[in-house]
Image 1 (tube, rainbow, N blue to C red):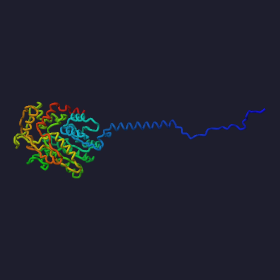
Image 2 (cartoon, rainbow, N blue to C red):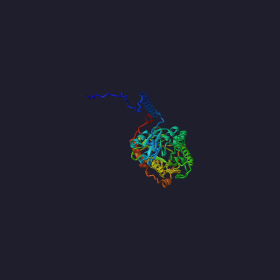
Image 3 (tube, rainbow, N blue to C red):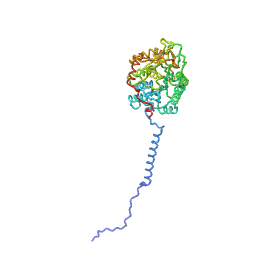
Image 4 (cartoon, one colour):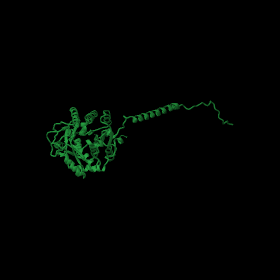
Amino acid sequence: MLNLVRTRTQPRSNRSMPLVAMDYADPKKKNNFVGKILMAAILTALCILMLKQSPDFNPPTAFSRHEPGVTHVLVTGGAGYIGSHAALRLLKDSYRVTIVDNLSRGNLGAVRILQELFPEPGRFQFIYADLGDAKVVHKIFSQNAFDAVMHFAAVAYVGESTLDPLKYYHNITSNTLTVLEAMATRGVPTLIYSSTCATYGEPEKMPITEETPQQPINPYGKAKKMAEEIILDFHKNSNMSVMILRYFNVIGSDPNGRLGEAPRPELREHGRISGACFDAARGIIPGLKVRGIDYKTADGTCIRDYIDVTDLVDAHVKALEKARPGKVGIYNVGTGRGRSVKEFVEACKTATGVPIKVDFLPRRPGDYAEVYSDPTKIRNELNWTAKYTDLQESLQIAWRWQKSHLNGYGLSVAVARS
C-alpha cells in the first residue's frame, strides 16, 4: 500500500522579507521643525506690528509712486483761500493732489469739502504739517512721488508784516528755501511759485510789466522778493521748470459756492478789503475803515488791480501746463485795470445791498498809492486772459458764499488738531 504522506527531507528555511530603505521621521525632530516655523511666523508678525507702529512706517500708496498719465501736485497752503481754490481746480482737471498746511491761516472745512467732492482712492490727501520744520518737510517728500509743487503757503498781510517782520521772513523766505531743498533732493521737476505785486513796491510808471524794477517797501514784499531770488539763483544750475506768478489783489470765490474766503477773526484788521466790506455788511464790525485818502490819485484813495480767484487759479494751471525743463517764466497776473478803493466800496455796497458805513482814516504803513498790471506777457506766452473782470459780479458771488456760511467753514484749529 502506497504511503501518500509526504515527508520533508530538508528543514524549512527561515525566509524573511528583504529590508527596503525607508525613512521614518523622528517625532522629536518633527516637533522641533514645526516649532521653528511657528517661532519664525510669530517673530515676523511682531516685526510687522512694530513697523506699523513706527512713525516712519508708511505702506506704499498711489501717492508714493509715479503713475504714467497722472500728475501729482503738492499744493502748499492748500487749506487757505487761494490754495483751496487751486486744489479744487486741479482735482476737477484730474490731477492727483496733496495739500500740506499747518492750518494757522487755512481752514480744515475747506479740506473736508474737497475730500467729500473727490473721495476716490489716490485722488486727494491732506497732510497736517508745518513747512518751518525741515525734517518733516523732507520726510513728506521722501514718502510721496510729487511731479510738481504749487507753493502758496505764506502769511500775506502787508500791515501785519510791518508789525511782525521776522514772522514774514521766516514764513515766506526761509520756508521757501526748505521746500526748494526738498524738491532738489527728491528731483521734483516743476515749481509754480505764488509771488506778489508787492515785490515792485511803488513804481514811478504804470502799468507794471515784468521788467519793472522790484523795490518793495514792506516786509511782505521784501520777503517774497528774497524768495524769488533764492529760486532764480538755484535755477542757474538746475534743470527744474520754474514759473513765478506775481499777482495783484485777489477777490471773489468759487462760482458754484463750494469754497470761499474765511479769514480768522483776529486777522480781520489786516485782511483783504473784500473781507472787511462783507464783515461790515453783516454787522460783524460797525463799518468799513478806509486807510488813506490823500494819495496822488483821482479820488485820493489807493488804486489796485482786483483779480478774481477763479482767474488766478486758471493762470496757475496754465503755468503748470506750459512749464518746460530748464526754463523760467515770470508773469504778472492781473486784469490790467486799476480801481480805486472808493470804487471798490461802492461796488461792494451794490453787491451786498447794504449801505455800509465808511470811516476814512490815515494811511497804513507800507501801503502804496497805485498798482495795476500789464498782462501782455502772460496773454502772449500762456494764452491767459482774465475773464471775471466785472468787479460787482465777483463781489456778488463772494457775498452769496458769505451769507450761506455765516460762521465761515465752522471749524477751528482746535478741532483740526484733535
